[in-house]
Length: 174
Image (cartoon, rainbow, N blue to C red; front, side, top):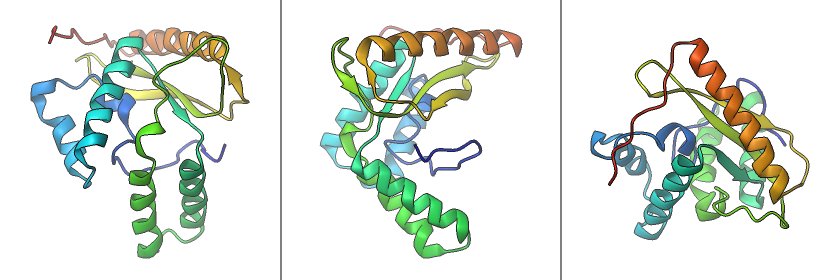
């Protein structure tokens, strides 16, 4: 996968779900994230569902799709020409074009998946996501292995959170 350490992406829907899934519904943070682009109501509804899934299971899995690969190619070109406004604009357009199949919502043990990233949040002392621990360069995996790796990643993220004095947020029902 063409994701590398230190890679920067604009925080535009659907990118960043692992960072926003634990934001309080009343905080306005999720609404500001959604308002950064002109995603339509169907995608907004899907993103709400996706963030609920990420929050419930404790990790995010992003599919390797043609739209995601096109974004990677544009990012690689931008790395060579970081001041290109045209490429910066294309990156933003590409992020939005990732659409509703970017986050893997259902993981079936016998199915095979191509993922770009598998991420788990590391919480700070206030229960906010301080950073995401992310695995990249994954081979095609079956669902059982996706769940196993996600579980391991979540455990390590929890240990890192404890090391920095972090704690998971207390989520209200509803």
